[in-house]
Length: 119
Image 1: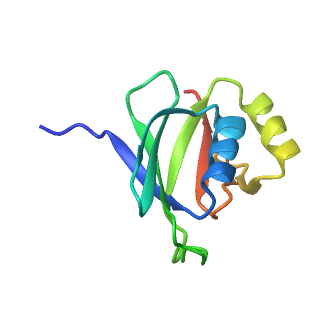
Image 2: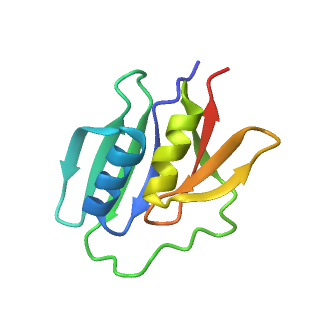
């Protein structure tokens, strides 16, 4: 038996990413591990146990190649209209699928995050 515990994104600017995830999705730092070469920061939503791990490689200067960009995390919201208005004001909406009633936001490193209504 297995339980999913976290997903990792590599980030180029840790502080910028922390601000984005807090403002856009309300994710807060739960714990951090610093080493001479990298920093790991685990974020949580305060509701479930699943975490987003941000990995910051201290000597990295080039943006990450995200390939085809077809992977994403999904976040559920009880108020899609309010979430959409917030993300529109932030300028981070990158794609909308009106037929499915969902949209995507993009973080500072180009990762897509799907916003879905509570069902």
